[in-house]
Image 1 (cartoon, rainbow, N blue to C red):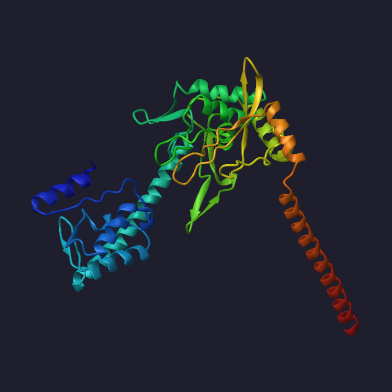
Image 2 (cartoon, rainbow, N blue to C red; image 1 turned 135 degrees about the vertical axis):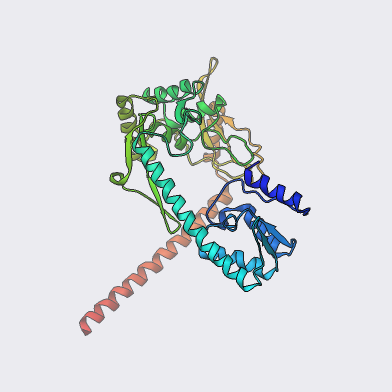
Length: 380
């Protein structure tokens, strides 16, 4: 329990008040990012309480003027008082109303000063090679005791396996499948219910491209202006060699980046290991696009499977079990293509005729437009 929550509980018990505690899990500048504050304001608006206890006025908010206006209107209209250890504010009383306005201004100024000092502290730390960017990437972790970034030894071999597989020609998709099949928790993709979504191509790509594993610390990649996030030019960022352990060599990083850039420049359909039926098969049960994965066993050797990974809104998965793409599969696919449903053919022909009619109308209108333009030119 935080010291503020303890103090509020103590004040409530000493004053013999019936109370309910609203405590934010995460702090935020604006009300829209503070779930508990939103809930409190709804309950105050519904006149559930005679008063709200806070350690200080600035605990209610430090956001923009419109946030303070919302807080003030909610308490004023519901005739709810604000209770602090030093004073009770009744916003229907002029002096308390003016005091509240002054306190809100001071809270905003103080918050800006704190933010500026924190930013200056982070910049100073980054220039010294210290980690100041929150949670470090896989397989690092932040040690609060030493205030340094260390390598999780249980994850070190996994990261090295990812690097070596990619350097040896394994593509991002196959690496992601390998990680998911081995039930290795992802560094980012955790659902709100705590379940792991599995590794994705983009997660593997970000991990491989990261310069943190090369030993660098970069601070100030993005900045926020009036609620809009923008990328900061590289020359304006702070980039120094960090104090943490390197996990790949400059030579490995260069090869990785060359391959990633090459794959980005190529047409997606021309990249290696892309299955010819990608984007053409859809699940008969849920209608989602089927995905392909490669497997291997002693009996069949390497084989491909078509699988459906779709999840419904309630969190349940599609009941489609998938299919190994063997000779029987391709024979059935060939038979389906050769013997197309006549109703489907008629629908295709109907759409084709509509398209042709539309094209003919467009051509006529274009000719009329050219004649009109020519006539206008002669008249001029």
